[in-house]
Every structure is written in C-alpha cells, then in structure tokens.
Image 1 (tube, each protein chain N blue to C red):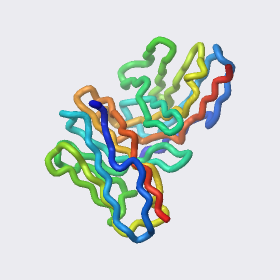
Image 2: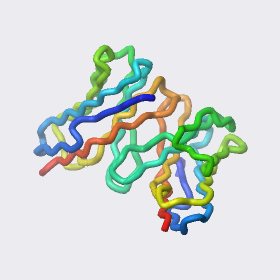
Image 3: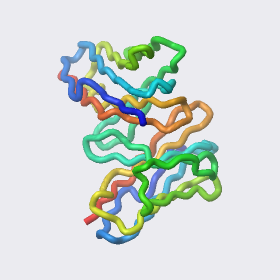
Image 4: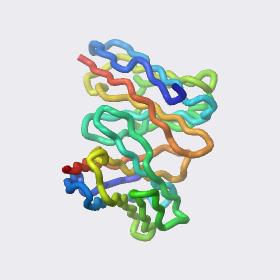
Length: 112
Length: 112
C-alpha cells in the first residue's frame, strides 16, 4: 500500500512569511496529488491539486510542485495570513476518482 | 444546503452496542467514500461506492463494519458490537465528474 509522509509536522511562521510543506509517497502509480486544509473542528477542504502530467500549479497565494522521479510534492503558501492557520494534509492517489491516502498532517500556525 | 450532510453529528454509545450513521452526498455525485479520522491523524480510507456498487474496502474494515448505498444516493455505515477503539470521527465524501472529493461534517463516535 501507499506510504505517505509529511514534513514538518508543525510549522510556525510570522504573518507575511512563506510556508512550505513537503509530502513524500511510495507508490509510483500515484498520479493525482491533492492538498487538503482542515481547520479545528471542521471538515477537510481541497485547496489545490495537481496531476502527474504537470510539474507546478498556482492559485493566487498557493502553489503545488511535483517531482515524480523523487516521489514528492510540496505545498507553498506565500504571504501567509492568520486565517491560513490549520492542519494541512497531502493525499496522493493512483488517479482522481479513487481513494485518497492521507499523510499525517502538518499543523501550520501563522503568528500575527 | 447542497453540500454533503451526515447524521447524527455526534453519537455516544456503550461498548457492545450497534450504531448506524448516514451520509447524504451532493446530488448526482456517483462516487461516495467513507473515511475514519482519529485525533491528530489524517483520515483513513474505509470503503467506497460507485453508484450502488461497493468497489473497494480497506483492510481496516473488520467484519463488524458494513456499508450500503442501496439506491446509489445516500449511504449508511453500521458498526456492530462497538469497541472503544472504534471511537473516531467518521467522514463521508462524495465526488462527481470533477474528481474533487467533498467532505461532510462527520459523525463523531464515542464508545464508552
């Protein structure tokens, strides 16, 4: 089965700084790479995803980069804001439309 | 509300009792997933349906767990003879043609 690891497990940044979270996976068949944000007591919500035929995708302050050869992908958040504080999960999958295997999560704290 | 809904939101039961949870997906979403999330961990896949067909079950899903989606719309997850280790948040997600999994608010189960 897929083995997914995220680093770091916690990340504290000052408002306005950038944050980077890395996800490594083991299954070379993974082709769909989403990132979910989960605020305390709330449901996970998709914030960005990328498919294996693309190396990078940006959506305003959020970007995801993929290195399929090394089997890792990263979440980049620029100009962080206090409302970015949450737990972030990567969840690679063989393809969109299949089960997600979640990493252990990264708790991001953005200090005002 | 056109999102994924789950009932009940909270369930407290005694060890050995049976419990049943319900998930109502977004209308016309043909895929429906069940995940389990314990405190401080990422969601873990349990099972999923395409329409009324149950296509995959995790090894985590012991014989005490059963899920149905009889008409390809709502789904139920039943746990028989509950154990304290079953205490968790049970999350349902639905997916349409866009391949994004939309999560419900979850049912928090506490087994005393």
